[in-house]
Length: 202
Length: 187
Image 1 (cartoon, rainbow over the protein chains, first blue to last red):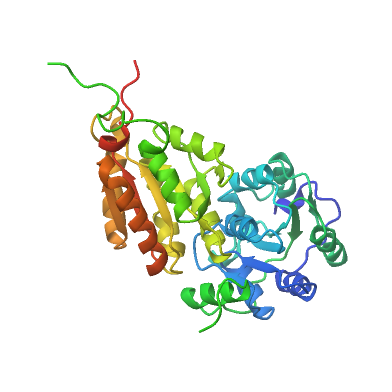
Image 2 (cartoon, rainbow over the protein chains, first blue to last red; image 1 turned 90 degrees about the vertical axis):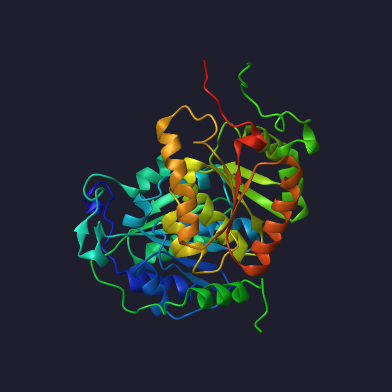
């Protein structure tokens, strides 16, 4: 695991638990983009919200999609949940976000160092790379490891009133997601647009 | 016989609004497309420069073309229209995001592709990757137009953008060297 690196005393947490803690803190119809696989499965399992968007492919694009939402609706906080393996596919997106500095974008990386869903193979970063160091090096100075669940909640609260983008990395265990997103892309997109106030339901 | 170099006759027409890039900019603006991420290309440079100079647009470089597709897809769902600028070789990186995001989620992804690999290409790899573009578009039954004539540019671009939005389907507008002059061998 990349968590073996210099990540302090960060506790190994659980994706579903951390996701549920995040959702419980949302009171202003914040948008949440769930990355491919377990990341959006646990977002779904935490309880569907109209402001949730679930990815069914395009691995690595949770942060870019969230950036687009953030640029379209600067008054709404936008969260993106992404796995470490997915993020490795699109590290350049961190610099794009650092360059644009959207004040309403909060990135959360669920780092277990493995491709859990395909058979728990280690990622190329496992044991050698530090996601937070990569983010800081990409220009995202407000990047931090969550030490434990309470620290995660504190970091989320800080990010929710921030004026710059924040990245929170969470060491997680190797458990699969606890639910399965209903795979209806048009319904997902349409509900999300309703949830963001872009369209009215028919 | 004098061998034509550099620009096509059409590409040399005028500057500003009466140039191909001026028409593209005005067509984007008229259709309220204000978010334009891109991966740069030599031919697209005057368009990119004029987009940066116009405060109506939020325009910036991304590290990869699929990143730009993700950004404009998110923006569309948030109620803001976007378009992506790229080169032929960049389009070749998009099959996965087209098939897993833009098409199944019914997102009107508007792509402008500066066409390299034909009409005077000097890099064999560019000419090969160009041949993959239309088969990929056709394999997903995506709308695409190759724009070769200045007098057809505004009609094709404006109508195609409106069709993409109303049918919630992607469109690729391929800017051919006959329109832009293309890129020719650097001495």
